[in-house]
Image: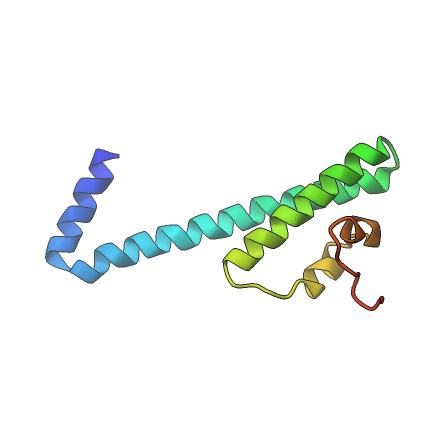
Length: 106
């Protein structure tokens, strides 16, 4: 960790904007990684729910995973979830448990 910090300090002395760019790049990479992990959790939970075994457990896991995924998306600026609901085939019963009306339904 000290080596990275020393390198960043040297970069900032030579080109101050480069140090900020490196940190911003790392933050963006961390956001992407975190969002990808949240999406993977949703995919796994939806697949578990579709398997038909341990239905209540998978339903609870799917609801929690989807809620966390949506919060993560909103934190980075994605406010609309309609496309990912369709792409990830998130069942209406999962969304209903979150108080969300599935797209195309009222």
